[in-house]
Image 1: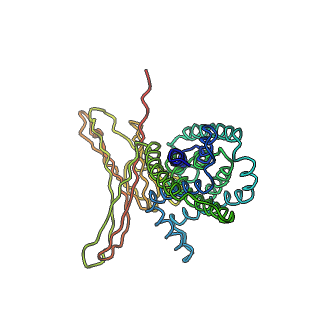
Image 2: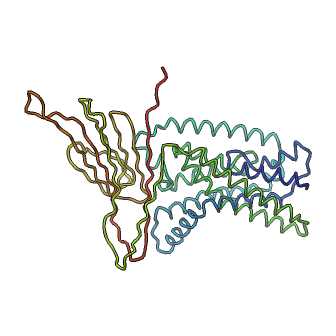
Length: 404
């Protein structure tokens, strides 16, 4: 292999592993189109190892938390939201391992170099991804009933059935031309997951799949006996694919992320020598600014509490609800939606504040404006010298302006 050969294939692998196109198929195309010799199984393993290191590094913090909570759940038999994500990753990985083991010999001998199969799969599943994206956008993000289960904004709402379906779709990626990331993203979008959540789960799912595939390919290389390996090419290929993949992951997630959402992290640290107990409150205030209108702004509060969607009437008196995982406040006067998704279940308190002024010729006051206060509350216990964190994802959805 020449350096140009190594350079092109490494870049191709880094670009395509996490984009919704088949990386394995694109590693075959250069040899077919340019008449290059087959790069060999060892090089394929090396560049896949490079992309594996990229996704592990990018999601290292998530992986540490998910792994630790999953192990803890196995020991204590108590499943936390992060542990559930870990079990979902395991469930989604199993189908592709089974299918890959059963059909590996047939696929590698009959289909791997079949350009027709690669082309048909690439086009067909590309169209399916486009259809999934179209259907997903029709699942209007305005109905509170769609927040949990059928439509998950974060992986904390992911359930085992969804993970199994995504895993079954992923099993199709053993066929050349079928993108692993593309088919898992397609499955997630069809089930109503928001694109950010579907992409994140797809990237996390790449880790056990690449590890399993790489281990199997290394075993095959070992069974071949004496095989001359070009170690310089393998190291350069792995390093280049790592660099390209880390850039692709960052840019792809940035591309699909919604501009109207923001995650804020609150860090609470107890620097005193005493243990502390209390309530941590994050308060949001909505105030009417146009007091020339005779009609005051009105707000509708919808939420998910104990995994059930509901609506509360908070027009005239304070209301509080416990164990809330999502809250959506609608400014009905301007048709603007404000979403709040805490990383941990909390209590919420809603307080309307009505401004009234004396009416000329009437004993009844006139409503001149109003404000609305929504507070997210956590009961916390903070040990001396320790710290905890709370995260809230805020989102704003505004109506699209109609073209004249």
